[in-house]
Image (cartoon, helix red, strand yellow):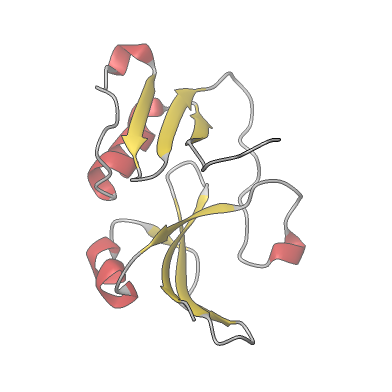
Length: 136
């Protein structure tokens, strides 16, 4: 029987590894999971229960930027959401350092669980969220 335990890693492909390393390590403050050696053209960052790998990709165009309206996007992986305890404080810490997509959003489920979110782009145009969950 198949027993999936957890997500182990998430990979981002880029033309400019250093640019994304600067963003995820310096701007967002994610620590390295493995020692970073610039010449190796990859990085591994620690997201607690997940490792974020950044790899050098081949030539070609990046996939189109996503929007926050799911019906407007092509199929595929959409975004990465970073859980925060206080959305207001997290926004203040990143204001002027990231490209916000639009204003804060809220989503509520009928069972009482709700989320406050703020979407933004990384330097390659990958969509990320800060999310403050309120789980029932």
